[in-house]
Length: 577
Image (cartoon, rainbow, N blue to C red; front, side, top):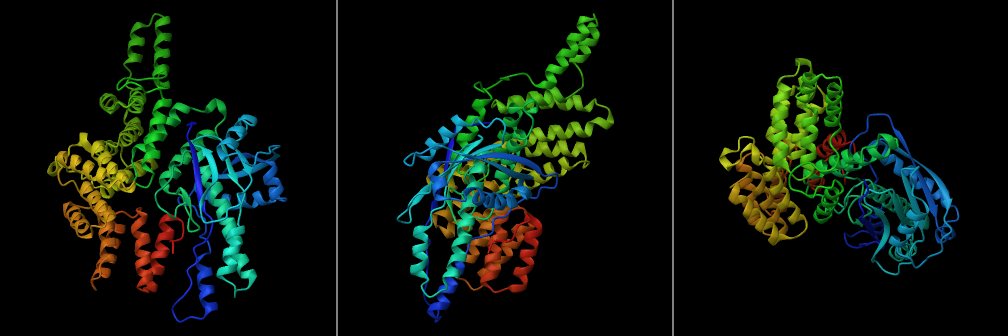
């Protein structure tokens, strides 16, 4: 999968250094402020449990980069070592580099120019990545500048060297009374964090990861020294692309990989940059050649062709009845693959009709074969966002495999997080509407996250005409009003969502609203709301982090330590401070 979308990342290079107040000495204040500028530890969310794979990358350093970094190979080895501490537990891959001198002197070129030239001199067919290193920029003020560039889903990326002259000057002015070695240790930690975070950011883009809206995530469009992790949603995209790229060329299936990426993106998530997600989906669909609203485009599914070839062989021997039986076989795999192709082509109605036919075939399978078939069917319904049909297929499969538990967890989490109740008569919601209702909720949240508040309100109003008082839409309304600063309206919408049934997102937002209230009892109520959200949806990270900050402000040491312990066990990374 290679989508021709170039992704840039930026960085605010000069620190904001607040100093003053509290009756402390000048040196104490400088120590305290310097400590706040120490960067976060880069960590992995998710945990790889299988064998670690090796991914080779070829690194080209141009003339300016080699001149500015005399021991550049050793320096990049250090970045790679830090990156591997994140990528091995996150993706199960260890990066190994080989180095080349890039005879290129183009100090005025843009990163996009460098990227185009790099792809020309090294197609990278024999490695997983091709990395270009070019000169740093001399920055005279705290402005955003390009630090890296990658082709979304491609093999090539370019990153700049590290420039910290202005940052060093700012540190000297802000911390004149501190030991230079103390300042240096923080500057070195910031350099190591920044260079590795930018490298991971661009590697992630090359594996299909999109920019995220959370300001302190590695995949945010702007660099932050608080950045620590990449979201599970982007991790899923990265694993799909990486698994395909690590296969031998003859074993690769670009079409299937594209379909998997579309399925992963179809479960819309408010943490992605909405415009980027929409553009990627459009490009992936274009790759599949899906230009019609109905029918199957591209090559026929492999299972279908296999059955057809078997039928041809029977016909060649005069076995007409055998050929007919082959084409009418109970094997549901062809129908499932056809449904996947129809879904990728933008035809969910056709996909559903094909899967209904597959259900009839599964019913006629031998008892030992049905569980796996129902799980395959459930996976296709999950790709459609059809929660009820996924649950129904899982009920027939039985809890016999890891895939069952993953699909069941998705269905349960989606219902409570985005307010899509199973018994939907009260909201005029029928199983056929699950996917559309889920898209409607995500659509409102995406517009809210993009600060398009009027458009979000309009989208919510349109969806509420179809599904009045749907908990997910009420929770999205609460988010909208909170972002607008209309706190009373936000509380009202959240309370309505909670009253309609379980909604972890509404509980989380209501907890935030309580914590912002000036009432003496509100903080306690806010903590209770956050705990309730965590109990209902333990994989939703926001209430955990909000609760951690609330307990820290309340100096509830024992409770905070227990929360940190539980967070580490759940997310396999430290609770952000």
